[in-house]
Length: 89
Image: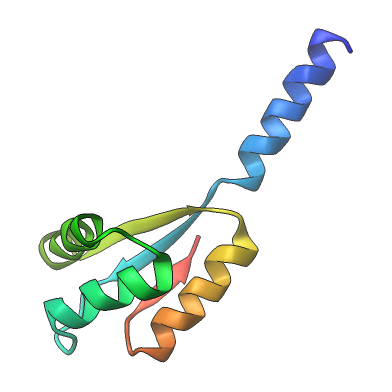
C-alpha cells in the first residue's frame, strides 16, 4: 500500500467519526433528569454525565458524544423522547 492510500484511508476514518451529539440547555428539565438520561441513553459514567450537565447549564450546550452518525442519531432520538433538546452535527 502506498503512503497516499494510507493517508486517504485515515482521512476517511476521521470523516466517519466527525459527528457530534449536542445537548442544549432549557428551563424545563432538572439536573437529575439530564444526568440520568445521559447515563441511560448515551452510556455515560455518572461523573461524565454530571460534568456534561453542568456544561449544558452554564454554557448553553455541550457535545456529549462523538461518533458515527447512525449511533448518534439513535441516541439523539432517545434524548428527544425524554424531552431533552439535542441534535447531531
